[in-house]
Image 1: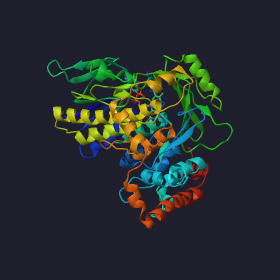
Image 2: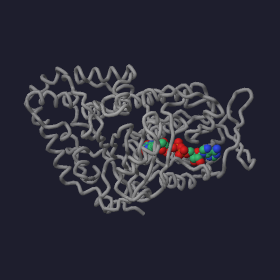
Image 3: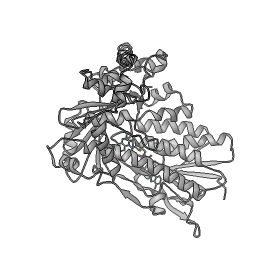
Image 4: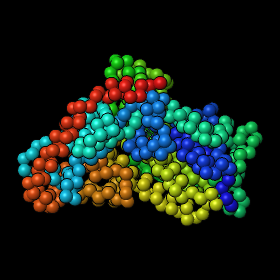
Length: 502
Ligand code: FAD
């Protein structure tokens, strides 16, 4: 059966991102109907505010003007994440977008750095990364602003107001023919033979039929779970945090927004700070087995500077993923697909890659088992790799000051992660698997930032460093990082000039 009508259930970030991307299909297929159903009464989660660099590509693909979008969503630029108090209380490091140096003669930079360290060079690896240095100085500029191939590029993402971003995309999608239907879904009808979803029924009795359904209904997974009973793989034993309380606040002291997210570890979880142009998004992610809600709120309130702009928003979640993301004619995106926690801002990214895969695999002739299998296999791998990277932040700690950290430090981790840590400890080697999202720099930044030392380096480093040209190139990387960082304007000034909040 062909696909003449796509129904998206849910109008949060996932729903409107899907609607915006799919609306582009209508340029060549005017008869294709796309309907989005959402309920203002139920509302959205509305807390996903930190993104990572591939998010820029999503917006570029939609030909969204960066300045216009950033002004609309009160956006700020993000160069990475600062982790405070993770390895030990008092520690701090930045996990930057972009790399430490670059590969020299085929060897990853951190091996050469380690080689020179062993010979008395005491420069920290951070000085070879532009995003880290710019973040420490509170500065920002885009590569386009200096356009020189001989200088390092700036890798960045955005901090956005999630609710206004969804509104922005709604305008985009509706302009391209997506029809929005307000109201609550009361029932879902399945085909008796195939088990496919044939339609949803709204509370007012109206039936909305469809051929392909995109479930963006949030944690409840209205179609993928409640109707199709797909099942959920629970990862709480690896990622134990299961609660969050969010509380945006004003930045009253007039301080400029930081060009990075801050993640500060507390006794049973961690606190996020996401700086937008006019306010900070704040929240405390914690584990209910080790902390009460009130205690979590008290810690959050005690660690934010400005006046709260809303009532505290308490959220509950179970880390994990659906056993299938694509089941029959339902594709789940966003929180309906799974949730691993917001530590590395990967949820919106997974919506983005889910949409990309959906568009790549889609055929308007109908759905097939092969499409379903490919989508599930590829998405499953992505989730596994991200999961391992997130677990690393909890496992790699020397904190002994709370039961929560004692639990995390001593918990079992997946074999794939244990191997990764073991290799780095022994030889400094990092393998990127299956085109995984996180780069060698990402893994090195978190491991070294949380006290897992490189036990050695690749023996090729000595051979490469024997060439006198290499030392010069190595030193030049630091000089060019400093050169660009010193010429960047303050982040606040850049925002005022480039994309002041509308
Ligand atoms: P929701 O926002 O929950 O939207 C669900 C939609 O479904 C709503 O429109 C609702 O009205 C509709 N709906 C549900 N049931 C019905 C029904 N019966 N009838 C009609 N409509 C219905 N991600 C990041 O990338 N970066 C971050 O910094 C980040 N921080 C986070 C912090 C926390 C504490 C949490 C919990 C999540 C965070 N996320 C983050 C994840 C991010 O918030 C989500 O991935 C994103 O908001 C997408 O949510 P969603 O659209 O899937 O679901």
